[in-house]
Length: 434
Image 1 (cartoon, rainbow, N blue to C red):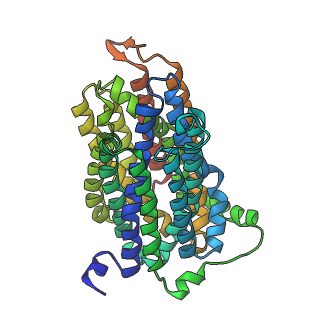
Image 2 (cartoon, rainbow, N blue to C red; image 1 turned 135 degrees about the vertical axis):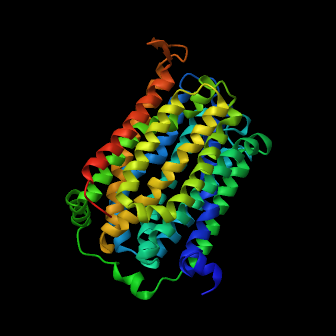
Image 3 (cartoon, helix red, strand yellow; image 1 turned 180 degrees about the horizontal axis):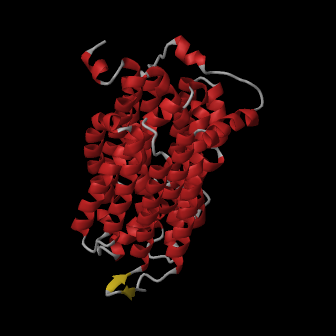
């Protein structure tokens, strides 16, 4: 084993990790660019714009709820590596279709060679939805594969390395989205994201888990609904997994509003231009890298369960502070600090799940947990988009001398819900020392 392989745990994990670096960066660049494209070029100033942004997030989120429960069953039956290869290939082709919708080439039979607004939105939502369907197979397959190629003693370090990828992508992707969109156009972003899936595909070709690991949990017991029910029963009966599921559902019921309304909070409450939107995610990513560096060695000593609920409470408290910001620089600092406890929460979650879950149920348990909190997230996104499209941004109320606007009031509710989720986990997991 080379020094690089030892540093990154082992050869297979190094290959898996490196393949996700470019792919994850492409995803963050792609997601932020789509929102900015809508706000700046497709429908600027339209009253229904918050609802359109909400619909974009829903197109990405709904497959987690609709598809992933069954996807987890099939992932437990199928070869994990082969599943990931297929999903990368399909996503590369799908994102390539958006190049035509972006106007890089004139489209025959349409006035001016451009798609009507309704057609353009439908194609964007359709591609995002189907690409997200592929992700619902890829994610549980990756979760299960990590359990096969990484020793249990190294799971926290593997989780930390995966968060490094996400956090670096969160720093660079959103920050570059605006200048790239304004400087060279949206087509280059779509092309890069498609290319990133090709790179991920090629690195996965080089991953070769042991034959025993590859075959030990691949099975076909019978009816898929019976297998799904087996995973659901495990989630409902296991105290830790059940608590994690409910706690995340409570938190995500609030966090969906933050993801929909943050761009409007930027312009209305912070009085900053949309060109600075990506820097909020950049600050969050920097905080997350700091949090990951601190949490990876400390969380196993602190205890995974205690780290999970305490960091969630800290996230909620910082959201309350963020909601009261009126200056961009101050909000940027608070949003960056928000990434530190959020990273600790994520570092604790995956190893805790893998330690508790039998390997033959990994895909199904992952596919129950994610849709559960996604359902809460989808409801939150829908309500936030609907409320944002109806309320007037100029409506304010004064309570005890403190002025509250519509957006910051919703974000205060977000912070309170995240705190409630953390407190629920604290009470339910009392006495559990994992």
